Image (cartoon, rainbow, N blue to C red):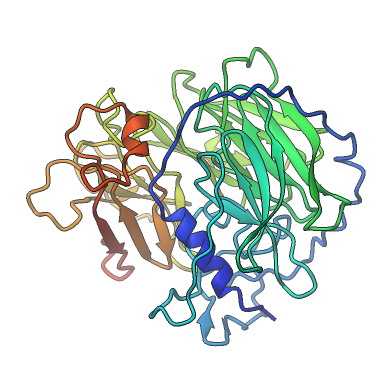
Length: 446
């Protein structure tokens, strides 16, 4: 039976919906020494854990609880810390949405605020206690912290400083908490595992439990994206187009280089229950296939690549890289049409849907010269029919066949991208606009 997590999701959704603000800076602390016990705890995750998604257990018809409809939830990954919000974008599909409705009035609402170092763009829920509450893990440029949001006002339980130096401010933005109580945070060319002390107490002091370093000559490389496969491995992507799978105790790894070494990445990655790893780069939208033993781009294994409109080589204001500004979001479960959803890099940004699995036999390209895998490509104008430019640096929110995009266009001001993001709370530079799209499975149009 599901617990009522609506207020948890509200807190996390409000954090996730804020404009991206990134600041650069170093601290003077030395690397924190890691405990050697990341692999000591027995992995008692039950492979037969009941999936809470609508299609994971066909015999489970419990898709509506207390009036909340869970039928559009993707399969729950049992290796994550529950299904409230255990990772950036909430789940491996990176949908960034929740079945719980938002508030319809201000009755019973209250605000609680904690100061800290910039910039914590998302938070994740850790392991739940016996009452169903869970602490919130967060990551800033310089700190990892733990909050008890069940108390009012919120209580900061523990803070630990990160190792000094930031080579890429995007690294560390995407984090996740696993079912064994570990919180994983990328930083530069390393992946850090934190846990509570004592182990098993979700509200205990934060300690560093382990460090994974990218293989090879990786000093100038940064881990950008992070997710969890449905067989319990961490999967990451670097800014230089390398995809890696590593066990959660860091004892085993598989690293794969995308076929074009000139491809760059500035977003996280999505994962499905069939081993698909979805990676958008400065040139292509890829499905890299995890077979359980290796990563491959072999089409016979289910992998594919498709070109999309990447736009100009100079990134516009509001963007952190060339091409798409969105982490791929997965749309469709069960017998539904299944897609990968991104925003492209055109000056007037478009919403793009790619067929996720096999392309329907009768499907024709949407226009001459377009990749046949593209199912839809429509302009995003945020309601302005005369719009000539639009931009977003957010993953597309997906729920069922609905997709929502928010604006990150800061206007025609010659401001450095990071500075523009930092001042985006001021009306002069603030981005305005939200637009919703829906896929029609009957007409197969967006």
